Image (cartoon, rainbow, N blue to C red; front, side, top):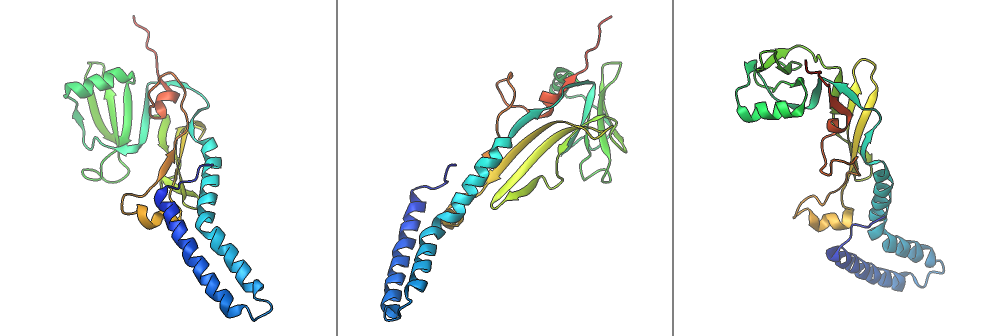
Length: 239
């Protein structure tokens, strides 16, 4: 468990303690003639002592527990000639690809086809862009009604970021077999945000979030998108 506290946070807590001590002192002066003054002063003092730390300690502990499940988890690798990427949009119209750099990227990927959602402009929601290499060697984009690919790379939840605890959010990507719904791989990350003491000042410099992305299988050394670990381009025998 690592607390997300820095110099500014400790200064804020010190000021809060000073103000709380002053208030408690004057409260004690007012209540000291009352026999049961401890029933008021002691609980208030405990709350003042714990409050600046409580939410940060809870967030840090919970984040540490969740992070044990972060990372790329491959349950099964499959060979396929293409896949559907539901995490991005593009290729909004039917056309022949002529950009040499794009063609090189598609060739190097090893997949014969890939699919994406169409962009908002150009086609109604729900259309799919299908990019495929044809026998004549050209790469062509066609717009179809539904994915043809068996394997889908997608967000586990359409909201993408979902609550996983107080000030913590979860993001998860999956590769699924559309024929039976099996999840054959997943990548899970968690984002945590500052407790109230730090949020008093860090909002002026950013959101102060921290991401736990876990580990991924190696090789390769560089981190890739989940489907690179799960989907293997189908081998074609040379004649």
